Image (cartoon, rainbow, N blue to C red; front, side):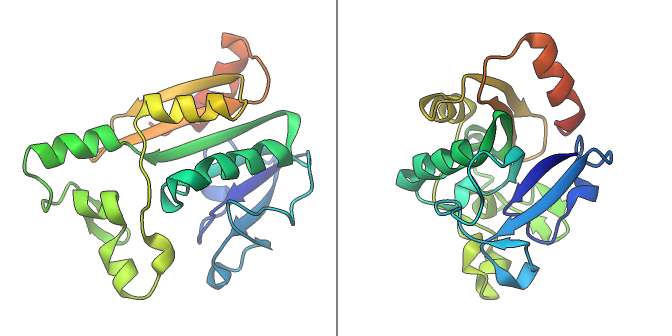
Length: 199
């Protein structure tokens, strides 16, 4: 059985993760917030409690945007370290390009979709969910953002040899990428990426 590190897991678990909820993966939940009771408590920039080369895949949804820009390369270095030689990372994060288009069209304070946390506005995606931050969850504050080109360049600079993904057609914009430590064929990429990417 392969091992998945669910980074910044929050309250989610493997049963909700497409491509990993098929019985072939053992999940380790990793988070900065002890309230969500992760298996491992830590930060994106210090994953020292996770052994080197011990993880087959990392799932990280809406995490990189919660650290400062200068910390992103540090986090990706940690991702790279804990992954096995044939490992990969699944990244999902807001699409800054779409958000900026909404703001340019004066929709900064207009509802763009409903979430389990309530209505979501461009301001929430850009700076963090206001209701959660007001309630005391400072971890929800946003500190950096990405376009797909910027995300791809960042993972390339971190040593991930094959990257695949793009902008998803979600209201408000979303980016998805699978980044591999090794070179992969199109067939190998599709086999892993197709079941994972949100529809």
